[in-house]
Image (cartoon, rainbow, N blue to C red; front, side, top):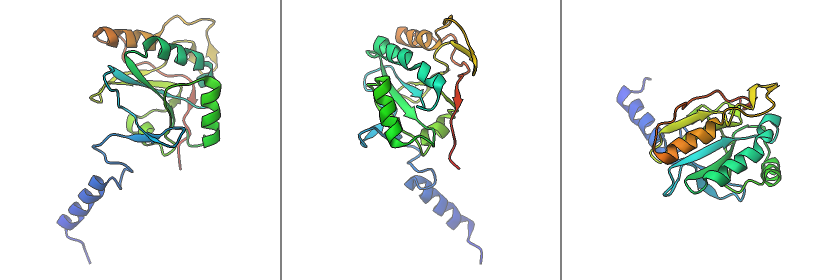
Length: 193
């Protein structure tokens, strides 16, 4: 027995609108659970210019090296931007997310994306990788925090280019980001099977 095309199409449309196929309403906002188990709307910026997403992992030494700089950037730009720390690596346990946030001193929401809804939507692949997204959902910057690492095991003695700081400064001043895309260097996000 074959199912008429229009019945199949209606069924698929229903599943998509119900959010069953993708796990969430594809047209609605993505919410992830914070450390307290409460949902946080990831891209909710309020009156701020954009949301800064830091993809992090407690198991990635490169990501952890950038912890102090992530906090410093949040301190320097927190009046104009909302910050989120995203754990999309499927191997990270809840206890490790909590301990990592405490050790790093993260104050903005630390979110569980172990289902990898956000990472897949925005094609994040590395920790640390940064995305800056405006309230309309436009990607303004993607890539590295700075050029401390030129390759996974090639660390410079000092930073020479502050890519994320430069991007946030441009956005804050209402000017185009000079380099909106850089290559993040670090650890690959472990994908769910």
